[in-house]
Image: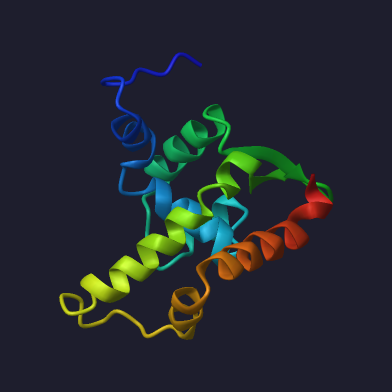
Length: 143
């Protein structure tokens, strides 16, 4: 894949991939909410349009952030799984969660309280490892 980047800046280059409003939502859904199929994503609270979802899943696959395979017992259903490159985004998801809790909560009256935020804040690295290990254990049978 020949991906076009705006400049040579590492942050801008990362945002060229991750800066879309849906990409990190999809990764969060896979990592934390156990979403694996197209249907799983379409039934989520975020209500991503199916054409956008298709486009983002294809892009994430082309970038090596996710893989697409088929369910072993249902060859018609595609299964989307995070790669190691995708799992490496876990610290970003955790940091965004903490930042949002500390800086966006006052602006968003419907933001839910999450006991995980307290755990994240007390030991980020342990929480990141726990999320990654949990994801791997739930998906290892599909690799």
